[in-house]
Length: 118
Image (tube, rainbow, N blue to C red; front, side):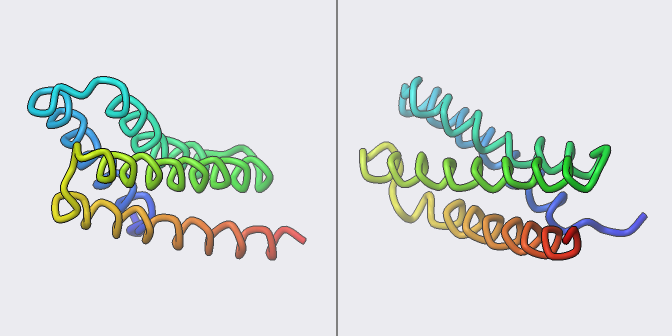
């Protein structure tokens, strides 16, 4: 089986998001924003998995579009957690970098897929 970079990166990112969620709940006693970042952060990889198993090129592009929007949303929640002092920048820098990298990879896949679909 050929390695799928975006599939692997989104899965590892989701694991980090789950650990972030546990930290926010257990240590920071934060229950609202943590659920938001958990939902969007784990949704990225789930949508990529759905795209890979998509029934058509249109389905593939649609799921990657959702994954991209979820990645952007996750970046928003992480920034909000930093600016509201639930996370220190040094704690979240790696997450923000990984999230930005996922946005770029997903965007490139979308662009390439749309160009090949024309």
